[in-house]
Length: 283
Image (cartoon, rainbow, N blue to C red; front, top):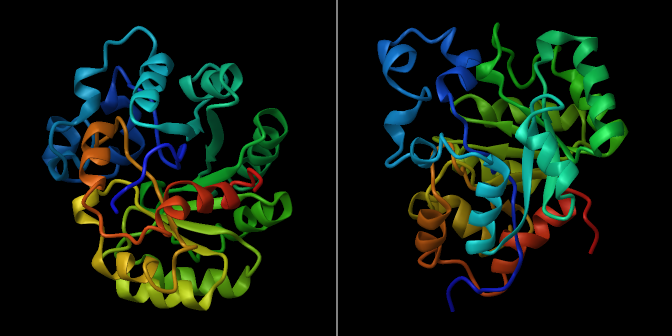
């Protein structure tokens, strides 16, 4: 049997159409050096994606309603969305549709205690379920195991919320050190962990609170090491995340998902149960 229907999927990386993607990604392109990401692309890694959904949606009147319609169409019950100020679509979505949206907060560790206070404030006001980290996107860049990250990890442990962190080429080796120092921290990787997916499997075996999410990958490109792990010892460690509307449409994701070779008993965990546990949504 392929992907089942009616699960009530939890998408741990979903967003809203943005009128100006260049401005939204300015925090990255201010430090990139190639002409394409600075001048040509709407967002820095656009060359990796086909038919970026946001391009056809940037002029919609209501970004929140647009995302909700896509969620309803493709069986997404809840979405984890980022806050970007009290007047942002994310904040409005969480306040107006608390049954559909869960809040996360992007934190730049370079902000020091101001960032820590922002976590507490967002937790008190929006009941954030996660903190988002993008080590390569900060300026200056901050490694996953840098001492500037440690107050963020400590605060997340204190509040009982997860960390969702982009992890690419340097990610897995550094995560090992963080998990050793913070064994209570719930740490979810984003954006693939390539080319170290085999190492990532070993680390998930080693650390009970370490998880892998599928953000920014079309299902046909889910790494084989990760799928093999999910079908054997790692059914509780794989978490679904999309990338709408930044790079992937829900139509493409869900159409390709039918061919993903997961065992029947793994699908509910991948699409809902594991995220529900990590985000503290109850049984």
